[in-house]
Length: 486
Image 1 (cartoon, rainbow, N blue to C red):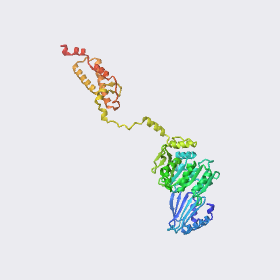
Image 2: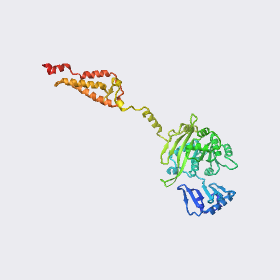
Image 3: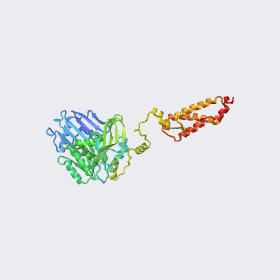
Image 4: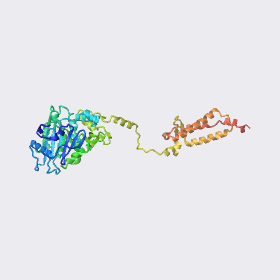
C-alpha cells in the first residue's frame, strides 16, 4: 500500500487493493461493487460489506490527506499516489449514491514476453517487429478502449528503449511510473496541472534534451499539439489514445483539436512523423472462458512521393480469428535505415517476394478474353487455304481438312479400280496405311486448339508428295486387270 494512504482505513475495500490481479474497482448505485481483473475481466461481487457510509468515510480521509475538500461545494475529488488513483463523486451530483472508482497503477511492468506469447496476447513475429521499431526510434501511438491495457503496453515498449537514452514522461495523472521501475536510468517524470499546461511542460521538456517523450494519454487538444510539436522537432514519442482501430488514429487526433487547421495538412504531418499505430483490444473470450487482451492491429503511416497520406495494415486480427499480414513499405524501411537499423523487407511475410516473382513469370494474363471453342474448331476460309495442322503425337505436318476429304475420295476410287486385284505391292499398301494415319492425326489436330494457329511452310509440297504416294502403279493396274487381259 502507498505510504501516502497508509493512514486511510479502506476496510473491506483493502482485499481488492492487495490483490495484484485486480486493476479497477467501481462502487456505485447504492452498494454495487464491480471489479476488473487481468484474468476474468469485469464482474460484480456480492456481500462485500462496502456501502455508502464506508465510501464517504474513505473520501473524507483521502481529502484530508490530499489537502482538499469533498462536499456539495466541491462535489468531485481526485486523489492519487504512486500506485492508486481514486475519483469520488458526491451524492449531491450522483443522485443514486456516492460513486467511487479506484484505478491501480502499480510501479511495475506486468507484461512479460514469454507470458504474453503463451497467452496469445501478441504473435512472436509481431512482437519482434515492434521491438525492432522501438530500437529504430519509431514514433508509436497505441489505441484502444478504456481498460484495454494501452498504458501497460506503452510501459512494455518503453522498457525496451536503450539504457543510455533519456526519457521524459508527461502526464496529467501519474500512471507510467517509469522513474520507479527504472531507478538507475535518466528519466524525468513531469505532471501537468492548473499552473503548468502541456505547452508549458513541453517547452521545458525540450530544454531537457530527451530522446524519448512519453505521454500517458492524448485526451485533449493541448496534448495533440504536444504530440505534433514533439515529433516534428525530431524527438521520439510513445503515447496512447482512445480510438476504435489503429488506422483511425490520425483522424482521432484531428477530432480532438479545437482549431481550424486544414485537415489534409494535419493528416500529412501525422502520417509523415508517426510511423506506427497499434490497437490493443480487451474482451471476454468465450473460448478461453476469461477476459482476454491482445494486439489486434498494427498499421504503418507514411506519405507518398505525391504528398498523399497513406496507411499500410501490417497486421490485423479479426474477431473470427482471420489474420492479415503485409510487409512494411519502403518508407518505413528507409526511415529505419536512416536511424541505423536495417530491417529485412520480408520480415513479416517471408514468401511474398518469391510468390510475386513466380506470378510474374508464370501468371496467365486474364485481360485477353478467350475465344469461343466453336470458333477455334471451325477454320475460316483463309485458315483452310493457308494453315496446316501439326500432329500432336509426332509433329508431322499434314494437309488441311478439304484436302483430306478429296484425298480420301481419290483413295476410295483407286481402291475400287483395283477390283479383285490381289497383287498390290508393298509400297502401295504402306501408302494407304500412311494416308489413314494422317487422316486420323488431322482429326485429332483439329480438336486440339493449341495447334490450330500454327502455320507450316512447304505445305503444298508435302501435299503433293502424299498424293503421289497414294496413286497406284498404272502399269500394274493394266497388267493385272482381267478385262484388259482379255
